[in-house]
Image (cartoon, rainbow, N blue to C red; front, side, top):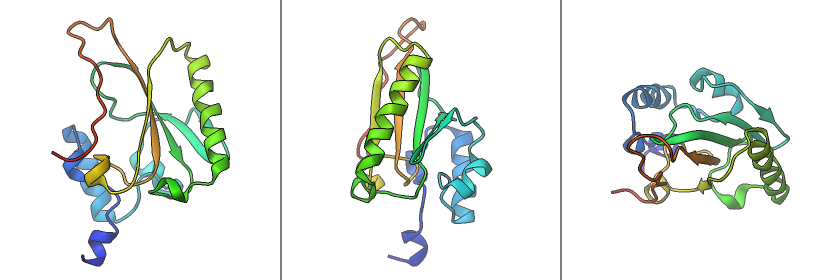
Amino acid sequence: MSDQTKKQFVDLDNAREDEQRQVMQQIIDDQSCPFCLENLRKYHKQQILKEGQYWLLTPNQWPYEFTQHHFLAILKEHAEKLSEVPPEAGKELFEMIAWLEKEYQIPGGGVAMRFGDTNYSAGTVNHLHVQFIVPNITQPGFKPVRVKLGKG
């Protein structure tokens, strides 16, 4: 495996939209992690809603189809595996997503976290983040929102 492959922070194969692919290609060219704080503003154009010691909350720049709300909780320090995250960060994560639930009066939804090798996780960004998803069940033509795991 080449050194450049080892430093791949995004997986273009898992992109869903053309604009997303274009931004991800720039990230590959820049060889930088788009979710690390020093790079976040360069690629992520959504506002930061809340920031804690370990996490920040922001709307997803490319929300899944049929979502009413799609937020990301992004770990502030670069990590790719759960074993790299301090246990205290778990407590803060739950506090922050509970804040989203209350702040946006969320009646229900789902929380998804993918980690590690993107061949398994099907993630686009190889930096630990959590998706907070509320489906728009009243949208015409609604189809259930699904989180993909594994390539294929």
